Amino acid sequence: MIYKFTYTLGRSLYVPITSRCNSIPLPSTRGDGFVLPKAVAQSLVNVRNMEEPGCVRENIYNEYSDDDRVMLPRYDFPLVNSLYQFHYNDLSKHIQQQKDIKESQEEGDDNDYIEDDGIEPSIESLVNEVTTRLNDDSDNQFDQVVIAGEGEPTLRMDALLAVAHSIKPFREEKEEHNTSRSSDRYSTDKLPVRLITNGLCYGVTNLGYSPNNLKRSGVIIPQHRHVILRDMKEVGITRLSVALNTANRHEYDLLMEPSCYTGGGMMGGDGLDSDNTQAAPTMPGIAHDLVCEFIMEAAKLGMDVEITGIDREGIDRVETERLARLLLSVSPDKYRRRNVRWRKYFD
Image 1 (cartoon, rainbow, N blue to C red):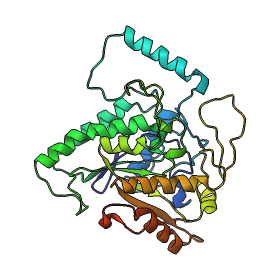
Image 2: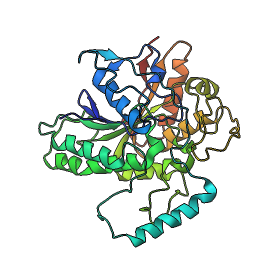
Image 3: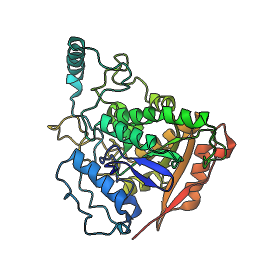
Image 4: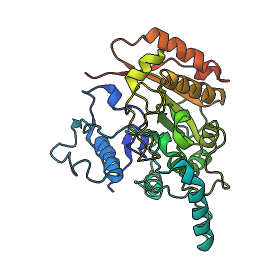
């Protein structure tokens, strides 16, 4: 079977849910010479073309053999801080309209976890592909499911949560059969879910939740941003890989160009008002603060947090690792206080 969006690396099943990003995409931070297996690159291109049809030539990698590693096409999308086109003033009106529509229709499947958010690839298509692959995994090939890709998954929280929630039955089945292939010797989870993120979700408009989703007891926008981590844990996301990259707040702005109202980057628009031409207020260094806060709160909740960085010229590795140890020191599990995982930079 040919899978369109998901891909595998080693014993991990990867699930990209968007190509859009609120900072320089993590694959792009690896350098201009960074290449990927052809199948991986094709999956990421497929997600791009679903979100923006025709943005990349179809079958772009046909001329390459299966063994080739290829570069992703240049990332030309503007960086955004929201994927949902809603004015704040119109949000309550939209919510009421959606409720009225729901009440006038027959009730759907009560087992549906989350409404579709109107973005492609649809939540249903992503969940169906993931569950199909896990159903076909008769030889227990996968050690973990990783929600990651070219874009930032937390920009699309409802899709992220729905995909993770769909994995629960497979994890429980593995636990019942008492398999023991977990790569983490401290974990009892037989099919853990890991999220690879830039850690900027605390600065994301609407915290990445879709105004289309009406299955949160009428609460569209969480009152507290810390609900993000609670929601992740509830659906089974126990591992986080967060790109800290540097210990310097202002260097972070230059490296990552965050678009989350913090300055230092490509202000590509916030996705809420296409007519809004007013520049966002510049607050240099705040994006790095948000990432650090996110790491600490996740560690404090007992989540398995891995901090990553790109080993490029000029980065102070010693200071970055010192900061990483400090951020993870709040974890109740001393075995999860790890050093930074440095990734190679490709010129």
